[in-house]
Length: 256
Image (spheres, rainbow, N blue to C red):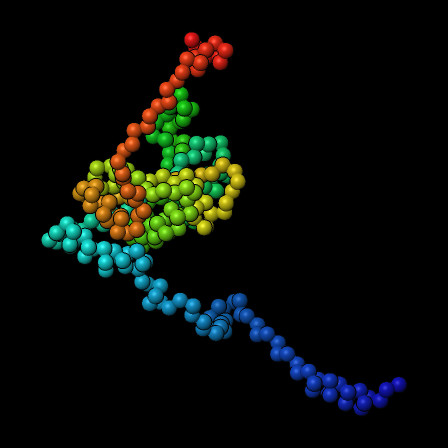
């Protein structure tokens, strides 16, 4: 049988090698004022001054684009210089009534692309030939303004269009006559936030509303922002192939 003094000495030496951990403080649930919160180490990844800065596209518009527009069109007042007022992004979903999960997935994808949650667009009237009832959801849309609008335009110009397959530039004739421009995107997967899906792709329409009075001013504004308009060359007439008599023979299945 071991000696009690020996046991006490061995126990004291064991606790001396491994210090006893302090018991965690008890939280007073009854009185929240007594709860003390331990502040973690302050690690700032983004400075507050940098986070409050405008996007680079807006900065380029204010510092470089406005002076060029004033010089080219001889504006007397700075308020005459055209600017982008808003951007409307909409996406049509034909089977929104039968596929509720697909509608929610489309809203989630468009929110990731634009940075703002879209709203559902509903039918204003009933059309029996298309099996559409009044109030039925047909698509989604989102209206962007301010810094969110400039951030989306920056990503659309520098990420969306260059990643488009077989992209040959934007059509400069897509203005509506009042300084507004519309463009369609066949695949939303050109944005890096959307995962590429081998199934049916979903496109969207982008309508850019400006305060320009003419289409020339609006095109110059968007071109200075970086919109890749293609150059319109001379229209070449496509010559039709002349059909010969054997194309209409009975043996070929055509008409004679």
